[in-house]
Image (cartoon, rainbow, N blue to C red; front, side):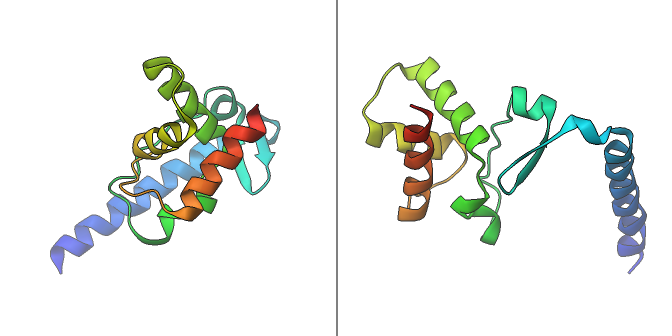
Length: 117
């Protein structure tokens, strides 16, 4: 019980910090691409996040932005050079923290790759 009472203010403080960051960002600095909203900085240099510790719906392929997939593709190509599309899809998925490449994930990555070309 006491541990939960100690953690609650920490969670509230973390949320307050996020809200302050959002409040301090001018609305013109946000960019919307389809369902995704990002700052101009995130659009210019999209973060490639490792989802290996995530579970459940956060791993759905539909929650990957094209900007992040393209950034992951660029990293893989910089490290490995040109590789066959099937290997590129698997390498991008691994870089994003996915253990398996199902149909949805494979389709999402390949559609993004071919849309960029």
